[in-house]
Structure formats: C-alpha cells, structure tokens
Length: 205
Image (cartoon, rainbow, N blue to C red):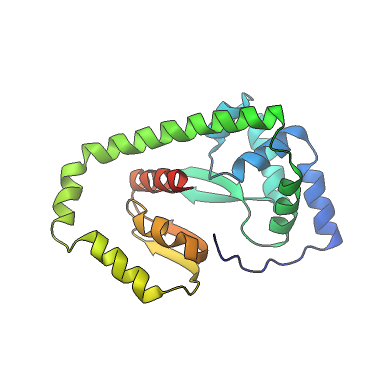
C-alpha cells in the first residue's frame, strides 16, 4: 500500500477538459492501460491494433488535458497516468468508473500482459548476458539481504514521501521501498537497466 500525497482539486473547467479528453473509446482504453504501467507508443499500437499516428494523436489530447504525463528515457518516451495535479484527480475518478468485466478492457489487459511478459524476457536476457559482471560487483560488498534488513529496520514504519533512487540498476531498492513512498522514481544512465527495473516493478505489482 502506498502513502498518497493529497492531490490538487480540479476546477470546473479542468473537470470538463478531462471528461472531454476521456470521452472517446480509444482514449478511455489508453487511459485504462496507462494506469497499469508506463507504456510507449509502440506498446500501445500493438495492444490496440491501431496506427501509430492515431495513437499519438489520442495521447496528445490526454496529455494536454493533464490525464496522462510523458516520461522520457533517452530516446524513448513512456506514458502513464498523471501522478499529481488536477488532471490526476479526474483520471482517478474516471478510472474508478470502468467495469473490470468489460470484454474490450479485459482483452486489452491480456494483450498488455503479453507485452509486459516480452519486456521481462528481454530484460532477463540482457541481465543474463551480464550476470558475471553483476556477480563480480556484488562480491565486493556485504550481503545485500543484510543491507536490506538494516535499511528497513532503520526506516521503521514511517512513510517516506517522495523517493528518488539514483543509479537504480535492477530496481531492487525501488521494489523494496516503494510501498512506503507516496511516489517513487528510478534514475539510471543505462536504458537497459531501466528496462530491467521496470520489469521487476511490474512483476512485484
């Protein structure tokens, strides 16, 4: 469970803008998908089976309304539901109205799971190719289980607020501490390592 920061209440105009942006079937599906993880245009094209220009136009509308936000990683751009701001409030309310039993949304979730599975396999492949390097690094330090236990003991039960993990690597610290944070962000100069971290976080839920 995360400790959520209070969100800025939207004005009437912001509510209307958000509802207009979400009031189209493809954009509503995009919103639902981006609520389940950070996704690229390519991911969304595969899941929805629509053209790249069409998906990009819909994403632009959702971002301009504040329902979605863009996250750049090198040459890649990921989309996710806004974490704060008035648009985040509208997005959460709209998402809360979507029925889990809807056949189209259910199919979208299945296709999303397939995309995430491929992403995890790709990350695992990269990690396996570099396993010897990582094992050598780990051997230079104390047992990571001991470090994690001491870290959790020192932090106790208090919430962390915003968490930034610089040099996140495999994302282990994010996986460990994200439940205590209102928001968590991993930063790494390696796009491959960010892929591994994202796959680990998706697996952890």
